[in-house]
Length: 360
Image (cartoon, rainbow, N blue to C red; front, top):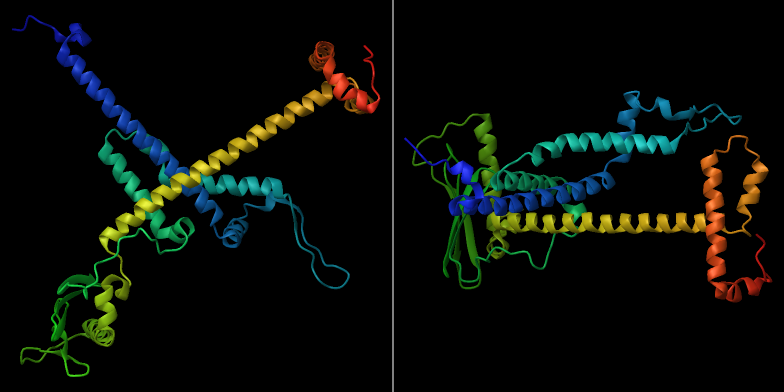
């Protein structure tokens, strides 16, 4: 039987308070990880939009009958026998294409589902998937030049390294390199080993390629024969370019090491965050510029000597709300009051254009 109800004590119990604090700290990390994911998402979405195949996407939507609503006038046969181009409402069409893209992109990544993740492990997995997907599909657009001065390179075999082991398209390559002999062994399941062997002579290296079926007849079907021909072709390539292979194995084979791939993902992450931040700052400046322009237009409308009220009066619109009229009156009153309280404005500006008084 228990006589104490810890739940009633709540945060007054040190252990309970400690657990609450730890949970709050953990939630901060989770919130930050979710925030970072969203920034990566928006940065990648911007890249995907700018790098889209406009022609293919347009014709896809056109063949599905999605764009007929935006056609203002179809092309017609001209007097010279040629056909004119269709006329489109491009403002509405572009807005539709953007929304069409956004719906597909958002559905593919499902931000709402990501926002419901509860552990850092799950969020990290989702982030890694996004970065890997971005690296596979938009590497050049995000990073530009594939080469990077900070990218780690595989240690050249020729600089003190005497062996290697890596896999290339299902072929395991093992190398052993000595001052007098170089050996590369190519292994593939179910096929004889192929060995590239080079021996150092007085003036050059002498190389040959051989495989040993252990004195037995090897029977291969068409698929295995094709694979074995690929192994032999690779062996010939290695034999001819073994020096280049020793300088950069992954680069020679055109494969990417795990370490290089991780580094590339990190670079993609940094660039996507920069792209999103730069876009945000640019949009912010544009919005602020629009607000300033709007305020300037409002001030022009409120200036007693502005031509704008006269233009509006010439329109003689019968439907002018009392609210709109009151707003104009208030603006005029505010402008007059401001000018009375700032006479130097008249001295600096109005006097230069011949205005010496204000008619109220």
